Amino acid sequence: MTTPLKDLGHVPWEAIKDSSGSAEAIPVLLHSLAWGDEPTARAALGDLRERICQYGFVVDQATAATVPFLWELARLPQVTCRVQIIHLLKNIADARQWESTATAYPKLRNYPHDYVSWERQARRAVHADLGGLRQLLAEPDVELVEAATELASTLAA
Image 1 (cartoon, rainbow, N blue to C red):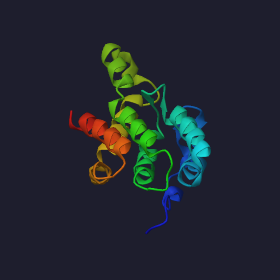
Image 2: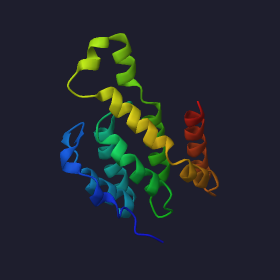
Image 3: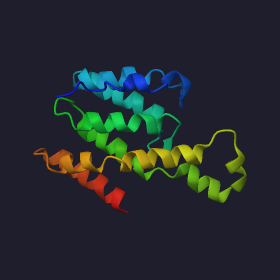
């Protein structure tokens, strides 16, 4: 088995933004998800959610870069909050806040940050690991399979 999160160093976290500013804290949160006990992992996931999918529907620049690591963690049996990670992936796949707003207010397309593009990249990143989704649908954990089935429905729409 490969080492979880070994590719974290390939992402320039300090150069990209999340909802709090610099995304440089994201690797620490992902490590807490991977190796923390349940309370630690849940707290890290809460912080991570606020940074990459605030309010459950507002994504940011760092979201797409974080998604592959969420997929990786969701497949690891030792991760204590896999169901919640799948729910977060579903929220990201459903996110259309910026796209909807830009449709209603075309001037936003000229905004200095390309929020619409970040949102689309994040959704594409969730769609990119359908093999991981198939693996989760075959898990013995009923709650995990239910969450994965909800995500599969979102991705099929």
